[in-house]
Structure formats: structure tokens, C-alpha cells
Image (cartoon, rainbow, N blue to C red):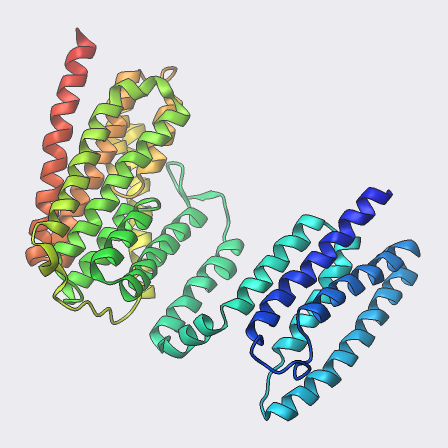
Length: 430
């Protein structure tokens, strides 16, 4: 490497030490000088020392060579041993057990070495992450102290679903009529579980009003149906006020309408003139319903406590994902059986499970296979059945006041969206 690159890498190594040392020094700023193993100066020098070790290793062939690897490894071992002795004496003096300072020092040295041997941007990013973890000590400890077993269990199950089960599932369709992609179905299950978990956490940490709205908006980016199922279950279990839960569904629906609009704009902008008015009108109706539902009664809307007993139920989530997979196959079968009209019918059925898939496929088919008009109608049919499904979910799972609120929201979307649709095609025809 040239001189300029070498200086830049040493600067990153020094910066790593200064960043970690700043946090360590700030935390012990009220301690007597000399009573702590390492502060900002020691950590800054540790980062620089790691950089020197990395530079020496690079000079004798790099970390991948035998000489360079042995040199860097030996330097790290000696440094870690020296720091361990000082940290042990510090713990004895304070009569406590803590390896944080030692681990932070070892990481600082290692990152300093990596700044000379590897990618500087990765080094800087890892230094920022490490410093953030150190700075959030009280927050992290408080979070661990307050977490319940159902929350921990649900989080572990969600992680296992995502990082253990998902990678080993086949990514090829299985079955007739195009089949079902098991990985996509499992992704639906992950989305359902994730939406429930996010909703649980949002309400717990932000309160019922803001929490449900934040969870609804976030869930709507992935699946408004998942938000509806999650909130319906909570309404049935009396884990929240039905109006607030319905407002979360309304906001998720508004996000879903806009999400479909973005997909169409990206895949086939020519369809926008036919679908945009309807989708925008429906989104405004859903958002307006959410605003009215939350703020119509002012602060009184928050008076009922919201207590979620469990972030999500694993088997119910998997069962719903499987049923949605069956719906996808049935919709494709009808689409193949009835041609152009079948495409709209199939889109309407598949829309019960996956609006995004319909929007993408129909946008790709127009105008070669389907006319723009039929493609637009198919997309809007999928959006309509997705909205109708929310009424069914509300009635079957949530029941009572929640079902009435969801029905009112869906009717508002149909009225405003229907008027916009009629005006759009009336002008298009003329």
C-alpha cells in the first residue's frame, strides 16, 4: 500500500480507539485518576498498537501468510494477557465481576489491526456498533430484566423461523398449477409472526395509541392481512380497545394501498392512470378512518389498559400461512381455466393471500398478454378481495365491536375507491 493509504488506515485504527475510549472514559469520568485499568488514552493507544501489529503483519506477508498471521496473533495474545492482569486487579479492588473492559480492549486492538489488514469501512462500522453497545449498558440491562419468558420464547422462535428453517426450505414451486413455493409460504408465516411481535413490543413500549398505530404502519409495509389477524386475535382476547385495534388495521390498509401503487409504478407505469385514483382514494379513506377512530374521543381513547398476553402463537401462524398457500393454488387454477376473465377471477382469489404477487404478475402481463384495462381490473380486484377478507377476519376472529369497526373501514374504502374507479374508467372510455 502507498503512504497515503497507510496513513489513512492508521487514522482509522486510532479513531477506533478514541471512539471506544471516549465511551469508557465518560463512564468512569468521576473516578479517581489511576483507579481504572483503561480510559480514553489507553484505548486510543490500544487501537494504534493494533494498527502497528497489523502493519508489521502486512509487511511480512499479510495475515494470510504464516509469518504475518503468527506475528499478529502473538501480539494480540500478549496484549490480551497484559490487559487481563490489570482488569483482574481492578475487579478485586472493586469487589465485582466484569469482563467488559477486557473484551472492549481486545476488540479495540483487533479492530486496529483489521484497519491495516482489511476493509476500513467495515472497521469503522464495527467500532460504532461496539461503542453503541457499550453506551447502552443501562438500557440493555433494563430490557433484559423486564423481558418475560413468553417474550423471550417468541423472539427465539421467530429467529429460528428466519435464520434456521427459512434457508433450508426449497425455493422451487411444488404441486399443480404452478404449485406453491414453500419458502414463500414460510415467509408469510414469518411476516405474520413478526407483525404480531412488533405490535406487542410497540404497544408495550409506546402505549396503546401510538403503539398500535406504529405497529399497523410497520406491518402494512409487509402484510396488512397479518396486522388484521393479529389485531383481531387481540380484540377477541380483550387485549385492547376494539377501536384502537381497528385503527391499526386501517392504517395498515392505507399503507397496503400505497404499497401496491408503488409496485405498479415500478413494474408498469402505464397502468398508473387506471389504478392510481382508486388506490389513492381508498388509502385516504382508510387513513381518515384511522385518524377519526383514534382522535374522535380524544384522550379517553387511551383509558383502557392494553395487556398482551403472548406476542404470537406459532402453530396458528403456520396454519394460516398454509391456508393462504392453498388459496394461491386455487386462484391460479381458476386463472388457467377461464382465460382472460379467469385472470381477473384468479387475481381476486390470490388477492386474499398475496396482493403484491398479483400486482407484479399483472403489471408484467400488460399489454402483451393482457390489455391494460384487464390488468388494472385484476390488480384492483385483488386489492378489493384483500379488503373484503379483513371483514371476514374481523367477523370470524375479532367479532363484536372490532368486526363492526373493520366493516365500517372497509365500506369507506369501497365507497371512495368505487367512486374513483367509476370516474377513472368513465374518462378512459370517453
